[in-house]
Image (cartoon, rainbow, N blue to C red; front, side, top):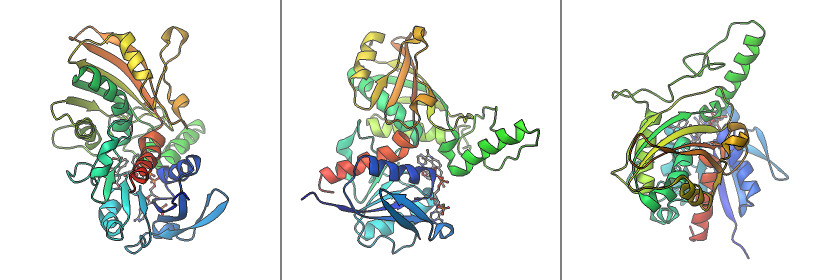
Length: 337
Ligand code: NAP
Ligand code: 3JM
């Protein structure tokens, strides 16, 4: 008989946690028992999974007894505090936060790109940042085929990337503005409705934000290429769901637009949407609720040697978080954990 696993979802009441439950169900993950964990605020709250109603429990050090796989998405400080307890209890931790991503003992995995790294884990596998994941899925086949010297990326990130409170803030601001009421800004430092804010995560001494530096370091780690030059500008836009990215590449060898389209369309997890004359290109609304990373607007950049431009869109709660984490869990199960 197929083995069944005891799963804990940490942050089950959040935007990522909700998708974690959807993806586990959708992919028919072999679950014996499911434990839903969140803060004391959510204790006793009921969530549906398949035909069962499950009660949310408060996250505690002893929450992981008997758990085989713990899927963490409750922020970096919760991961730092509780993941070691989960590992001590014998669970494999798949962590969605930035807490352990750059730890040399923690593999950082995008299943289409570096699935073999999962087996190097010492109890924790890290899920990359949402903006990194969708970009790296597209970079990987190009990097393998011709090599990449430099990546310049600008993101257009949806508010659900900040969590449930940010979704509510955008909804409320749109409502208040349409009723002539003043807006309140609690999650973002500026009004997000009808605005574009070049600020995701905190600013660092070098003028970049931490989100931008995550994209630099994580991309190099996943592609195993410390020489890859990456510069990122991360921008929050008033979109509910799915991140978009304008990506400019300087390749090591020539790759025609036609060959790039072919290479990308043959790679798992990618859908090429690239018929601009029919107004067909990747859109956040089309990517929402879907598993694939959409890529289009693929064109030659003649301003540099071997340049290529493109537009990449994906649902950051799915491929950028929950789907990627469950795919890692599936690999771990295939490897016997
Ligand atoms: P969210 O909607 O704000 O949800 C946060 C979750 O964390 C809730 O379940 C919350 O429980 C729980 N939590 C907060 N404080 C806690 C505590 N002290 N103890 C236990 N649980 C606690 O945020 P989200 O968008 O789901 O993101 C969660 C995390 O996933 C992020 O912080 C990030 O590290 C990672 N992540 C997010 C995305 C994304 O696209 N959103 C992508 C990749 C990774 P309560 O409901 O009880 O407060
Ligand atoms: C996406 O509480 C926190 O530290 C969470 C901040 C956060 C992160 C992160 O740094 O883990 C919010 C949204 C991420 C991420 O995926 O890097």
